[in-house]
Length: 519
Image (cartoon, rainbow, N blue to C red; front, side, top):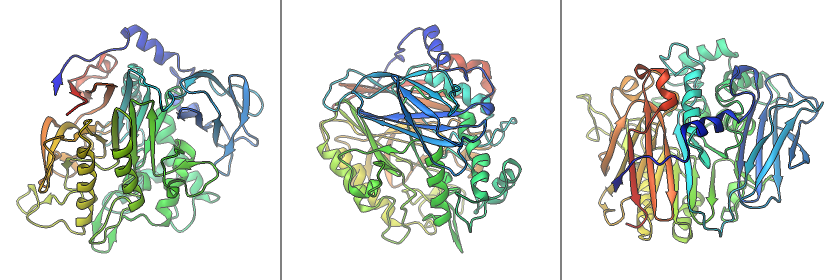
């Protein structure tokens, strides 16, 4: 492992111009403008559009290099639309234009590029990644960062011209039960009303509640600023409107019918699903005609990177021999680790690898002990040994491929950290230690960090041995991951309100870690 200076792709002026050119929303109040988020593979685009100005009775039109396509309405009111365009060429830039059904422009035209062909050999790939971007606008910055600050952090990340954006979980916060339920329901009441958990989301008043209480957390953050950068969103606990919480009479996961419904509708309206890939088992797409997967997926950038992304909450089983991932997903991950011809295979679990905050729904058994420290002496209530057993199988499989270093990128803990896992339990991983990265939180307020909520800064779990290159930092920020055929580089950016908002535009990495691809 080597440290070096951060490699910029262009001048600061050029990077800023690139962000400014993303559209007419860049300098206006996001509350009055649409959400446009895109994802791609090497032959297909999928674009999400949410109109804030009012519903459409007929479909808006997406033009791709002059060829028009209509969208599919994904709510019942005509606010939210999905566009899907297939049969495109690999590694090709296309000009896109969105107009309403009456022909008026939704936003400025923009360029979106497909990923390179799977058998191509690109020389570089750059990823912008972060977690916990959700939360209503909080001008005080106490619970969540004000939206204006989150937008500035996001703009700084985008100024480095990433090839893709990876947002890892907690895109929204609106807990219905558990310790945070009363507080977030009060916020929900003022922002859009209360959910009726006995009714479905679409076609009931719940749909309007979701659009106002949850939709604003996504649409008012992103607007159209990311429409030209492929985005990949994986869900975590709060995206199901619950914190992972366990006490007598209440374990918030596995998700019940309402939680599954609200997570599916939020994803369907606001951020793209994972595009079908011929490596997926049939359970991923469930035979749907759109060829998309909601909870598990991947993306590939030529032979340079294959990313395996998985939601650890949807199928969580807290029986004694439980799991976070169903067998078919675990089998897929393990098979891709062995069979992929990509130079780098990156795993993206929504729940962190390496560190713990003593939460219930973690891979690890650590919990607050009678003296106040984290440990395993007193067992964690309602925790499943099967979760750690599945963790051990995944990290062992990642370490077993000695041709390349494994990388886990995860979020959830409202912190930034980096290191390498030397062992798990009695399994020695030192011959090829998996690299672990906590990507950094984009929206945590002063009281939103683990040390405030739980009394602990995240620590390495007693179930594993991790060499920490960057110990957990409770500040907001993001990480830029650069991949070349022979190395991966992590550039870590953090910011605290005491640093001043004026510093965000010139934010530099506090640590740059370069790791050779070969162990």
